[in-house]
Image (cartoon, rainbow, N blue to C red; front, side, top):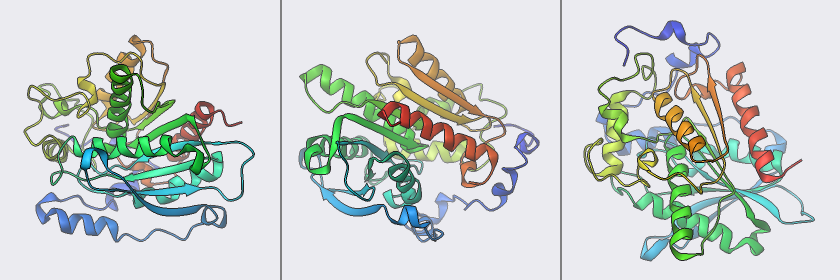
Length: 326
């Protein structure tokens, strides 16, 4: 972390959110912190987003695990052909958050792209360390593909998305789905992975030469250490961490779906995102990267800022291309 403040590097349009972002204080206990986030009121939905249906479902967990709660979004009206689908995995440092927190964004994807969106309420750490959340996310992917006919979707056009810890989960899910297909010759395929400001590498917590201009705002090195330790069940940065816990640990990135990565220039995850992008490209994976100047972790909360609008436009355009939506 920088020894001097990096606030002078923050884009002026994004600066106000620093002082109003909900504080993240794990010392108050997980229950209190989680309830504080879940009780935040969202603004009323515009009519076009309110018209998108949202149904709560409980699907079978993997290998005897508990049922997994998902939110199933569908645009209004019928479709002449099977729709594409997006499996969305929420963020929250692996320890907080829920499927509900992405409700407006998931409705916007369903409305704008005419696709089905399923958001996963995976089990959180530290109560459920890895691989519990991975199992829940993969169960949702299998359910989505396995019920394509009932859901009216095209199983060849399933993309996965996530931001922050959700981006890490999405990258891990892409690795796991690839591995299952390689090992068994079957399993649901993913056509595209969209990972925003992703939490990919536990070794960032022990980097002897940390980036001097990232990680000051919102998601700090201290919070990052707590999140990774909670997921792994041990101190981050050690030996034996599986690639589907920390995707940056993967030694083979070949055979993964095309990727989209966006990251703020002041985000703690900048270096690991840049390195993952480089390695995907070296493995022959089509990858699109956007670094947003002056942006920090969570600055997208300032939705009307030009940087946030640009990032959202780029994200939607990438999804549309990947899903064949014209």
